[in-house]
Image 1 (tube, one colour):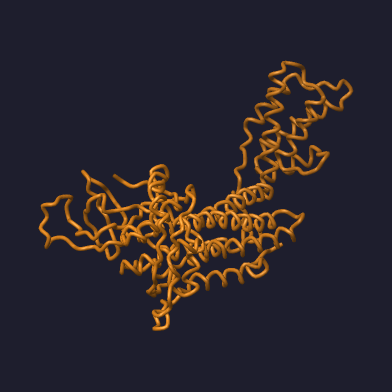
Image 2 (cartoon, rainbow, N blue to C red; image 1 turned 135 degrees about the horizontal axis):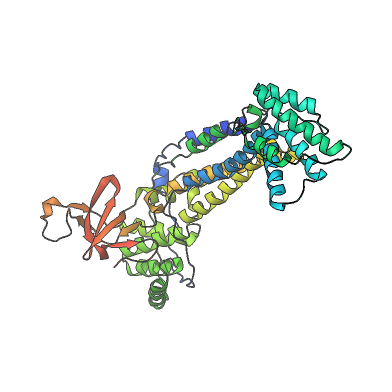
Length: 467
């Protein structure tokens, strides 16, 4: 079998994944019709607490590509090493030398007379040592092979005499090996040089996984950012007096688990009722990021953002973009990471099946078809998951937070910095905390804005608030 890129079925998949990854979605335009589209009203009915979200991992799901490549790569390496070993022309000689020395060592340790069984074993091992591949070797065959391999007449004579003495010990009338046979055999075996392995990996294309490097390159290049879009909705809200009683319980629930998105939802609904728009945006965003598939979370965040008058570009794209720009909101950033992990396992299984099809003769058709299916499905899911995770921008970072109030970014953690040396940052801005110092938090925002603010001005989306 000589697999090629076309026969293995990888070419259509590579073309598909390359096209998917290389095309970036165009930014959506805000049309007057979209600006006038009414948004759904806010949902103010309290939810039962205890709906715990998941904090994203601190690394990109693009790293799962390494997992998808490493598993079949290690599998291929093992099979390729074994194939190269099986086809090594010196393998028989090396095994014969090992067997010969092991036999002589066993005879010395046993301290018994040399038995016919030992002599038969020595003949078999000696023949393999000099590359004779017959079941019943003769002295002439061993001598010719030895002379061909070494070209040493003295060595050839030594082994010919040793072989003749062994045959006399087996087939002569008295059937007794010479008294010095063990010493002579041990000395001759010690002088044999073990032939080195000629290669560690196969040198034929049929034994290599077709286009393994191309698959990895295609998947890596397929990772693309999501589209940019923006729309702003006008909407109205209704009030629910039950939220005042639920708000205190929600605060206690957040003290126990900051990832309780139902508690964030209840606090956001209460803030909407009270007109506290900055707090409503912050908690509604946290609830949305931990459970974006909830219609109530999306509608409340839209409503709060409309009333607050601020809108992060990433949230705008996820909430009001074109249909393909809203796809990432089907899962949370943590959900897309876990889907990417599952996709990498599926991709690894598909590639591993194709590797096995190269080396195994049975069930090759099923391995090939299953490998193609796993490769196509895993690559598609992995590309989708990585692109969706990237669509969240800074919001996919486990340390991401939001400003509860408008602040002036200070170049130093002190109130003594003149105001003209600070830069304003409005409430609702998504930030990444970096380090803290005596009640101050250094943050960075979009546009390379960086500075120090008071810790209580920043609310994290995941984990626990930093005090």
